[in-house]
Image (cartoon, rainbow, N blue to C red; front, side):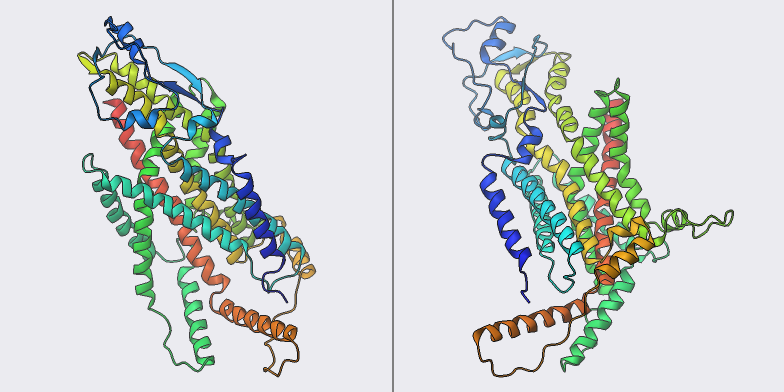
Length: 500
């Protein structure tokens, strides 16, 4: 049997297709193009005219459309002149086109991450259909590699952004990252102490299963071992990993809080949009509480119901899948509200100019132009901070569903699950026979493939679905938890600023 077969060919075709398509169509570019409006910085002529300054010899205006990067990096003040802060500026607006996005900071990272995530999601869902319709239980699921690559890209982008904050010597960003990192380290240690009767990750059961299977496998290979590291050491390593993830999500959480508050200001007359914004904010809380057993499973599954005999709302297996479906709903809501939040960020240029009009004194023309242009220049930075954690949670959920051996049919009831399982049942793996003299090259290839598949099955006996459920449930929950906590800190901080 082929080790990868149809999946491998399909993955290569999809990767080649998206690579050829990306120069002509980009999903990430489409999300921002012609859906939001930006503000153009005033030219030198406009500022001189409004301030009543003679043009002198400088009749040329500063380009406004595609020279953001050049202007922001300019350190020369020879062409700059002072204008009153309360100069009556009316910023012109323009629709964001695809060509306007090219010079923006972090645009390539944003485009690559969103486009690759779309391709990985398509491959994942088509692979799920393939495994659902065909009894290929011993075949390696290639979509797992796509999910791991996407998660790796998300962490790489978050790491790149955090490095930028560490390079800033003034402003306190470095101190804030370190503070939140130590804070999440302490919180993670406390979370890992909580038992499975409160937070039902199943981490200890999964680790015991992994450790016992590893010892059996090594003994079968003739190696005496007491197993991998201890549970305490494993939890300490997990706590530090959670600390790093929390530090990565500090500024994305603070940014989301600012975007949420600004979006609410512009949606005061739209009740439907307000409800969507609050749902977008509170869905992570629902996901967090769904892993709290006394609040989630015990209530929904009716474990502690004594006042009725009608039974639970849903069974335990269906509850696990409903929890995954809530995460999918959360991602869809975040994606749909992306233009709304990006527009609230672009509106900061207008707000800054209006605030400037209330101040006295003068400001340099170049400084004023940079203040307006910088908002649009960092649009993709904001988009990355908004989308990357959501993509990270989504693909951790995909891994949890696949490696945790969950079934989407569990939501439809136990009878449907049983019928589907019996229909797609497949025979187990049989260890390959002892090696014999191959008469042809084809027989040698088939024998090698069979032995590799048998060895892969041996690894599956070590890394069981119980192990993956414990580890990936914790990581998915923690990403959502730390992002939400950072957002709450941001809401409190920016609310106090507005009151002051």
